[in-house]
Image 1 (tube, rainbow, N blue to C red):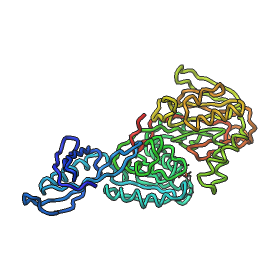
Image 2 (cartoon, rainbow, N blue to C red):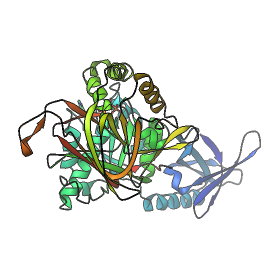
Image 3 (cartoon, rainbow, N blue to C red):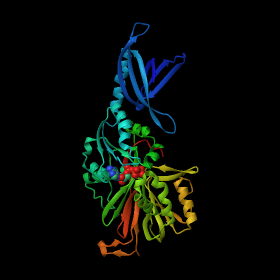
Image 4 (cartoon, rainbow, N blue to C red):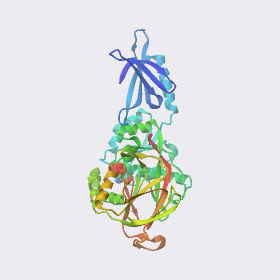
Length: 439
Ligand SMILES: Nc1ncnc2c1ncn2[C@@H]1O[C@H](COP(=O)(O)OP(=O)(O)OP(=O)(O)O)[C@@H](O)[C@H]1O
């Protein structure tokens, strides 16, 4: 922390401090009001050489350090009383007119990742929220589904945002709760795939404490916890897409990261059986799933976003994957694209194991060209139906159920396909996240 007698200049959108270092070098520190977190009055110190009373104020602010990481810096300002008071008044004014959250509902999954979510909240999140004068209402989940129900029970008018401390699965639950509550409040039938979904206005902040934390990585360019906290307290938000999956006239779930039918669904289902292994299970189990990969005899119906044509394709497929946060190529890498105008749906048909592993490895490493294989098809659409026209079913008509167990990975959670048809719809920019995603 710098602690020097300063010259303070208030500009329209920033404040600058000019002081001399011990070496005699003059330093100018310019801090945008948008980056100021809090101002604390420390009181009178000594007198300067001109017999003026020296007053001290500490200004806490955010600075980007490296690799898109953010940190809290503090400037200890010492100056005459009037200058300091003018500074405090101005900064408090600036802080009060921003979109900063003041009341947050916090939901913690104590079982996320390495089970450190509660510690992360207590040691890292709470002190920053306290510094910024944010009031919190904390809920620690007891079981799966608890977060969704808690959000549904919240009076959304009482909070400025909902913060999750956990992984992508916890984010998915909260997002589901917010979207379902919003549809109910607006009289929208969430079960109807054609209904126009009303976007959820309450932003979600994600403090990464899970195993994957991909939404955080895509949004902030880092999984760093302090960076995620500072994105919440500074209050900037970005919009992101959601997709819904419907079966048998009901909405099964919304996804905000991935909705992958087939191979990835099987991988997640296999990984769930080995939850006791912790995050290590994701490194080992998928290999055995790929080695025993299975194909599904499916028909996909969609309206092509480019031609507007209603199209059907039938094939034996390993997977039908949708990345809710789209991927686009930048140089030799895939980078995230938030709020894409259509879904990119990737289907994988029969191919040799060697080629498949090569393609999946490229995809895992986020390499450009990972979809450029003859067995991978890319479709751009607002939604699609997947049917199992030749699958064995039990029951008839609306009661028919698939006999084979098939799974979808919905943001890493396992969703079973029970009906011989499911439908997926895009909901453009339906969710607000704390963070300034740069596409
Ligand atoms: N108290 C709880 N006990 C068991 N499961 C929970 C609890 N709270 C939430 N869950 C569910 O556990 C699943 C995984 O949670 P979460 O995403 O937080 O951690 P993770 O799986 O370690 O991380 P990631 O999803 O990033 O891989 C989610 O479906 C979540 O809803």
